[in-house]
Length: 431
Image (tube, rainbow, N blue to C red; front, side, top):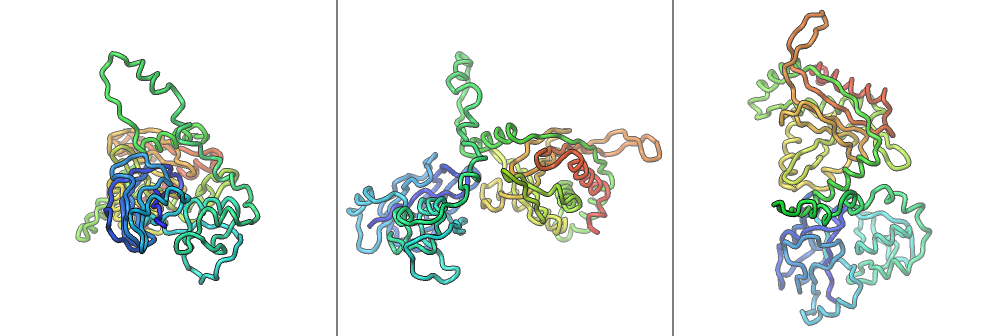
């Protein structure tokens, strides 16, 4: 029977995407692992590869189509002995059997046990199942590895999971409860028609929201409404850092490495999370998760939105390694080529608008992070030295936005003080 290729869920929050480009055409033969299309999510453009082999019988969604819902049929794959005349039969079949999978999404969804029993699989053998079957199995607490699939080539489909029995998972809805639908967040305030009416007679051009802007609007609205922010501010003197940076850059010049102030800020924050470990935590609904590594996210502005790629184990990496990795992540973020695991996670974020001349600002926490550091521009200002004498110093204003559910005032103050000490004594970050 022809197999419907469905729009994949390329990230945990993806509800729809854009079919940016087909890399195959009708009549082409594909093998498992062949890249078939490029799919744009709200955050990235990802490759979509075949799981089964066969012939592309029909393309149902043209490239460039926006707003394609997850699990919508986008093409039909024909197996040996089938022709285009057989495609009509797929309309009567369950529309949840995928013939392809995202290239970056190799991980299987864990579940728990069920029947009927499948032939024993060796450890590490891949379980082929449709996305809908996986979701049903996860809700029912069924282990897909124990099921025998009735779909093409033994694939586990919806009927196999619905007919199995297992103990239900404990409180399956708890994890899904915290995130509100994007539409609900966007629905606050006047409606589109109400706003249009306000500007009748005035010239304007409507700009529909793309997936990224919808996601930013929904998540940051939710974050500002649901996260109890408080703010801590410190001025940081940069003269010692700027002098030290100039010396290091001269030494690193033959290697083609040029450190930025932002590289030092990333390192200072990563070390501060180790120095104040109780602040290295995230909010997880009904508990907090205390993290051991310093995984620091850094906001990167791109056309139409922003990414927050994560530098993992940033406290363990040299300044030059952080600089190289950050440049690579930023470049791929602007091209929307980051994989989900490169911009998800972390416990702390940095948003630096100093290069735009902004003196200071307050950043919105990106859940589940517990804090974000807003960094302004360094500027020459009069300061009073330790000896009581007035002098001129390069001063950078910083604001730490903190989730009060995770970090209390004194703990947040200790974290920001540690960041300040690291930046004002940069040589200590290399010790």
